[in-house]
Image (cartoon, rainbow, N blue to C red; front, top):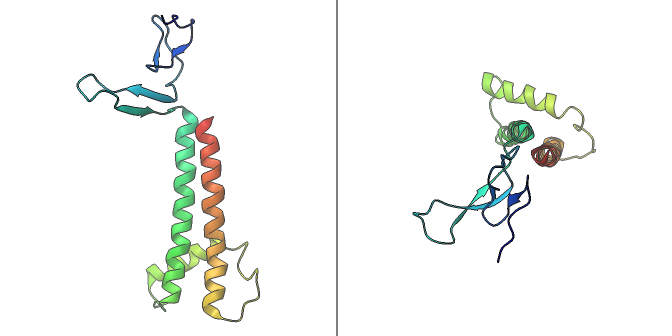
Length: 139
């Protein structure tokens, strides 16, 4: 026989609050799907607090920064027209984003210098941005 859940606790089997208890926020875990679906099917319940939204914004910013740097690497390797306004915008944005790491290494080949000089900050932005987003999502 199952014990009734303690007050202010959530029944872990159904991920629903105990009768008469209203949880502060959505519980992280699994809960059964509506009765019309197959038995055993579950959906994920995720935290929807303010940290989750901030975490998504941080991850999106990191992804956009890395995407700009990767696009510039591709444009430079493909010898895009530097007089084009779009190419110039990506060049300026990539220079601003990679200002701390450009010419960090003394490399002779131009294409390797571009890949390392702009690829390293793209990788750092992805790793640090998503680590920070994961931390904020848990808060």
